Amino acid sequence: MTEHLEQLSCRELVELVTDYLEGALPAGEQARFEEHIARCSGCKTYLEQIRQTMETLGRLPEDGLTPEAERALLEAFRGWRS
Image (cartoon, rainbow, N blue to C red; front, side, top):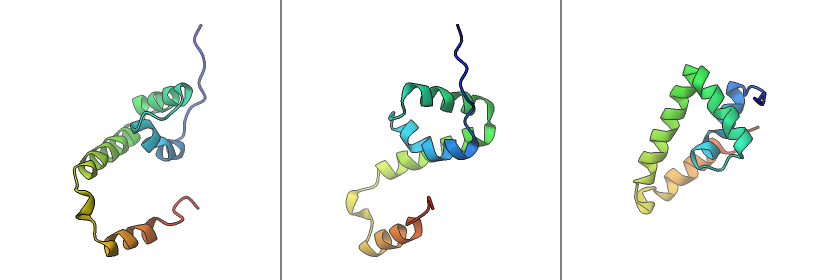
């Protein structure tokens, strides 16, 4: 018996990409995510860009960001989900 999964929109995928890469999605959400990636080349490209960004940032030393740069980034991303 095959379970029908409601399709995930591109917008929903963008909101879930970090949780997906961190292995934090529940099984059902992960299946929807992977189904979407399999059929949407734009989101597949986005996923790979975020994966590469996370890998690169993970190699930066903790003290590599100045307090000014940290404040600027926080200000830029404050309220981005609004």
